[in-house]
Length: 200
Image (cartoon, rainbow, N blue to C red; front, side, top):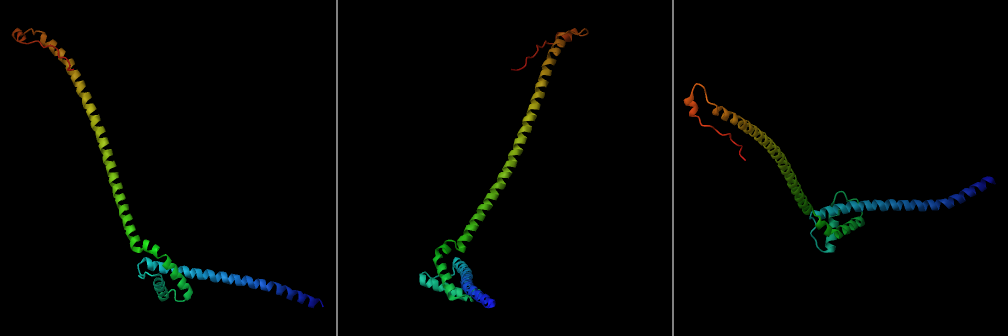
């Protein structure tokens, strides 16, 4: 009797929990399948968008553009295992972003990169010339200081030499005014010199 009651309770519990677990498993499987499908759609869209940026698709109308993209995705070796619905959705997404692919196409991006590279090279060349000009400026500044210092030294030497000369001239003038003992004829022919004044 107790075994029958226990089995009955166990069956009731399983009957209550199994449907709930079945629903949870179904939700998990659907979520996993949805995530897998979105991953496949994203991969297919990236391939179609890359081909569109390269200028592979030429059709202008919406129907022809989607059909052309679907044909490209079906022939791609990495996408042959995907379902047609996934390829169709990726082709539609690629057709919607067609204007974006034209704006940021491979040719436009490469042209922009070349332009930026040229600008970078010009900036580097300008920076190099600026550094060279800075070095030349420092050399000229140091040279100017050296020349000014040499001029100051030469000016001070000239001033000292002139002062010594002015001090020496009065002594010479005094000696010239003093007559010699053994030669009056020579002393009379000497003309007295007045001391020179420094030039103002």
